[in-house]
Image (cartoon, rainbow, N blue to C red; front, side, top):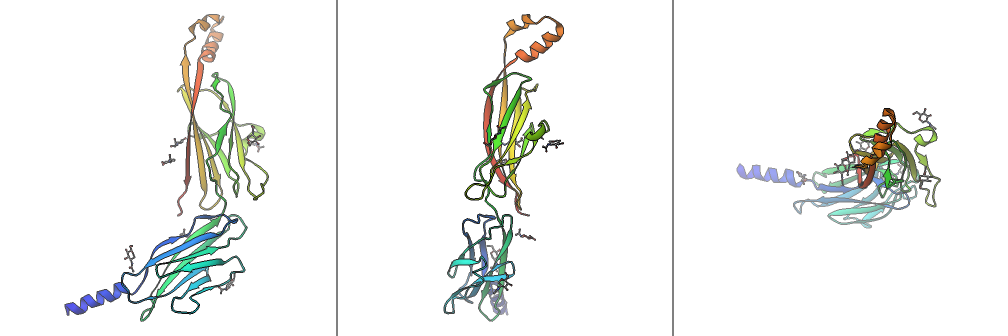
Length: 283
Ligand SMILES: *[C@@H]1O[C@H](CO)[C@@H](O)[C@H](O)[C@H]1NC(C)=O
Ligand SMILES: *[C@@H]1O[C@H](CO)[C@@H](O)[C@H](O)[C@H]1NC(C)=O
Ligand SMILES: *[C@@H]1O[C@H](CO)[C@@H](O)[C@H](O)[C@H]1NC(C)=O
Ligand SMILES: *[C@@H]1O[C@H](CO)[C@@H](O)[C@H](O)[C@H]1NC(C)=O
Ligand SMILES: *[C@@H]1O[C@H](CO)[C@@H](O)[C@H](O)[C@H]1NC(C)=O
Ligand SMILES: *[C@@H]1O[C@H](CO)[C@@H](O)[C@H](O)[C@H]1NC(C)=O
Ligand SMILES: *[C@@H]1O[C@H](CO)[C@@H](O)[C@H](O)[C@H]1NC(C)=O
């Protein structure tokens, strides 16, 4: 009786292969083929692998059947399907031609089935969004060496070419910027380059006013994909007071003394730029 129980347990565990990892990039550049790999394993040699099938959406695009000749078959390859495949008893890799439409979301499923008697099937699905994501953090330009308190500073934040183009938001001390005027308050998008990609830029007109000694700036560029793809750059304006006390005597009235006090606090600004990026995790 105990022998039968142990044997029954063994049969249950050994009837299915296991998909250990499904490699599908979250974003796919339509200028290149996407490489997808399904990794699977079977703890015991028996039963054997029957087939591996790849689906795009609900349509089968590729099949690997080690017991048949030829072992691999592609389906729907004309409509942007599989260009090549290479499979063995542990993994199955395919290259897929992507559609040209940015923000198209594709789902890819790897389905592994095991030989009889049960023909157990396991599968896993992952999504891919057609996009050329930002390869570098946005760049902040226009930061002056020194500024006076009350002075206006015009900064610019620019991204590398990407598609779909990024939207840029400036943050001042953690709050979204609301100081921009007129045309400057929108993300500007360049015309398409030779690869059809567009860079984005957005200006920030900032009046230097802080009692804290520094201002934390952040430029956040987000591509409207799903999930959204964000890269950001921080810049910290560190204000160092330098005591030019003799200049206080130049002021005549009390109101100009106050003004001068504010203005003559010479500021040395050192700028630390931190780079950072994040892709919001898929839900
Ligand atoms: C597949 O592998 C995972 C961990 O790698 C394990 O928890 C699970 O039980 C395995 N499933 C089968 C059917 O072997
Ligand atoms: C090929 O794709 C079309 C739609 O794109 C679908 O209707 C058809 O069933 C697919 N064929 C196979 C064999 O999956
Ligand atoms: C893929 O996208 C579909 C909706 O199009 C969603 O329901 C599903 O949860 C996504 N899958 C993964 C693994 O994120
Ligand atoms: C910001 O940078 C972009 C790209 O380098 C440039 O085209 C644009 O004129 C700049 N804007 C300002 C206000 O300097
Ligand atoms: C950049 O600034 C934001 C707040 O503005 C902060 O949450 C983040 O940690 C900073 N990143 C780095 C790398 O300093
Ligand atoms: C700039 O922002 C203001 C307020 O947010 C808005 O009323 C105005 O239309 C914007 N300018 C442009 C050119 O979009
Ligand atoms: C980027 O910022 C996030 C929080 O916004 C933080 O968790 C992460 O560690 C930062 N990465 C780097 C490389 O600084």
